[in-house]
Length: 537
Image 1 (cartoon, helix red, strand yellow):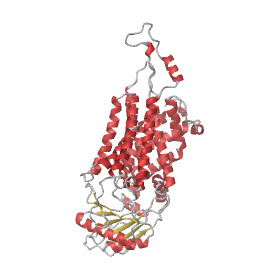
Image 2 (image 1 turned 45 degrees about the vertical axis):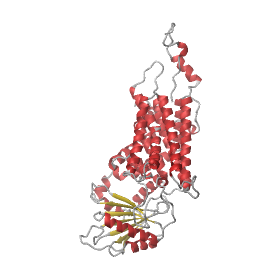
Image 3 (image 1 turned 135 degrees about the horizontal axis):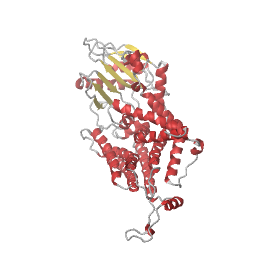
Image 4 (image 1 turned 120 degrees about the vertical axis):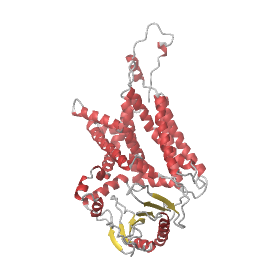
């Protein structure tokens, strides 16, 4: 880094953005989609029909069926997790853990019969949500990678603010008819400045939500490695109990659920049953978080043998814990209503555009002049740009398409959907290495448009209850298909723009002046009159 302070910041901004730009683009895209995580999950499980909220008696009966199933199929599990039916997810979600190193069990039940639900096996929006902060890697490694990228993103944002002499003028400047480098720079500035408060907030809160993973030493030292004691003292969880080592029959779960529903006004979301069959069995009822910024769930702990209330956690978080949950709430936007959620989504899209235009701008600034040779790294960066900016949306569309086209009873179906996602992404990243740059952009963007249209067609053709095929269908399908059509139109327009682009007259003239003069005797293989001006995306 040489020169003035602003020049040093420009160097830092450029290289910090490029090094992690492709990963940041994936984080922004999947994070933006996660604002509608529940809607995506419901769309990917079309067998589920939205129902009215279940009363206490209905929840109690469903919980009894869940415990009966777990006693039969997971008797040795240490902990049972029962996700109770909700209006937009009217099934029982059962998870259980046996021992460290073994994968947890999971099954979905019909709450009215206790039988396994006839719902297609899919991770739905949860895959995109977890990819946003784990990148489909082992959780510890994935979160570290995302955290490092988020820290670099914060550096890029702050250095970007420093180097902008005309930050307010850039807010209103977008020269779309100028040279590509100028147009992309203006687009990068506009999307960065317009949603700058959102970019700073989402990056900083994203780092804070995993702060105890990146800096665990304070908790480890103060609580001598007992992280549960820290969470209990912060009022995040109820006090866990160790097994007594004496067998005891559990109390019926139905009365416990009815008492929990009568005690608290918020909807009951799930139950956690620990040490079942032991004298110290515990049932923890976890309720939906109250509306507000803070991301905290009221909880009631019951004695699993007597059914008596042991402890109630109703807010009252310590200041540090309250700050942390508020940061988490800001990042995930659970508090947002429909209008505010749309605003968050649009700001997320601007974040995607800011990162995309930044990494494309780097390659445009290093295009060789006439008579110069391109360096090998530029070709790799250009291919990675196409593979990320066009490849990731194509992979998401293939993920949705696989959900509709794979057989419903296919074994390991959710894994095949994820394989389709990564297979499409790998293919989209490799093809640009073998194609001319402009053609790779045209084909990649056009492929995304076609795949989005294919998702809409598959949705209409494979779902008998689609509103366009049957009256009274769920309007969610129309909203989802409409969004895919908008994306298809945007990518189709972008592909057409790239294909028909011509360099501005002044740019062509300047390049012609810089080009070496032709020989006075034309070569039979190349005539000066047929000199063609190179263009690029």
